Amino acid sequence: MFENLTQRLNQALKTLKGKGTITEINIATTVKEIRKALVEADVNYKIAKQITDQIKEEAIGRKVLIAVNPNELFVKIVYDKLVELMGSQRHDLNLKGDPAIIMIAGLNGAGKTTFAAKLAKLLKSQGRQVMLAACDVYRPAAVEQLKVLGEQIGVEVYAEPENTNPIAIATNAAQRAKAVGKKILILDTAGRLTLDQVLMQEIADLKKALQPSETLLVVDAMTGQDAVNAAVAFNQRIDYDGVVLTKLDGDARGGAALSIRAEVNKPIKFISTGEKMEALDYFYPDRMAQRILGMGDVLSLVERAQRAFDEEEARRLNQKIRKNQLDFNDFLSQLRQIKRMGNLKELISMIPGMSTFAKNLNIDDDAFKPIEAIILSMTPQERSKPELLQNPSRKKRIAAGSGTSVTEVNNLLKNFESMRNMMKKMNQLTPAQLQKMNKKRR
Image (cartoon, rainbow, N blue to C red):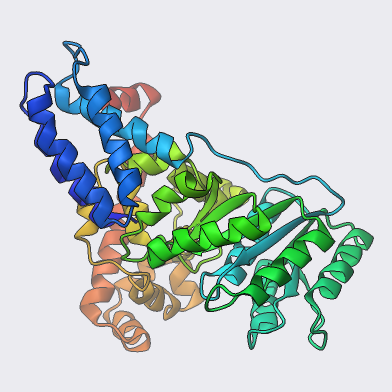
């Protein structure tokens, strides 16, 4: 996410390291490089110039505390301006109505249908009663795609495959949702490959007829300035309530997303960073600024973990760890829960100080597949009793069944045993000893 922008900003900010004070001379180069970084990331030049002029004005003459070096102070100024540019605070959904109707709009290929399902899953995880409605009557297989996603997340999808009137479908869906007690109805509407009057009129008519409590525009962050153009055009016709940025996990410049707020004065409400149903986050300008500046985003990482990990399963696992009874069934379960959190490279980049390291990592979502294959090639007895796997013939059979080598099987067994031994030692430590260890680390 914003890898190139992060790298360029960090390079620009390095020019102030070692300086004793902030002066107009020593920040001139830095400000120039920040402006170039923003423009290259597809931030509108006028906005990039405005924000860097503000940074320069605020930085010059600022008194530097003894405990804070000029570089740290300047980073803080840049951080504050990025937060301000992106909207300063998180904006929640307006969920008034019975049911509350959320209308999803956008161009074809922006990821509207996938986002609709992700949002339904997120709201469902909060204990809300949700229904999806398939109102895209043009794109082939759009209805079927939403049905498949709805089944995957356990959310009812209202559809009328033979009906070509999206307003009638949406109206009937709202009646159905109210009848069965669903408090939120999400409308997945049709998109187009280009902005045209037919699309705009249909979306405008749909909004007028259904009076949604929330209208969200989905834009593809990888399309650069086109994303901003789409945001402006849609806002002129339907006056939406917020923006959703998708495909932020892609290798795009993505900076245009930063200027959407300034261009249309609409808040960014969600960001989507992958195809997995869990890969959706509320948009926090402060957290995004931290990530852009390479500071990590621990809060979002924790929130994602809380959504992905089952509380009852965590308690059960904790008991097994305390009794030193961890087996490969538990290991496989935890592996799958980590996968549900999203892209591994992105998760690592959320850890403070790890964004540069993560950029150079060659990790994809298939990284755990060999490990899963090895565990699934074990018999149920072997998974529950890892000690049985010391037998060479068993290792050979597992390697053949998983399409891996005996060496890979041995490495997994070795790492698993090391993990168990470490947990066993930790369980034997007293609270006082643990506290002493933590002090030493600090």
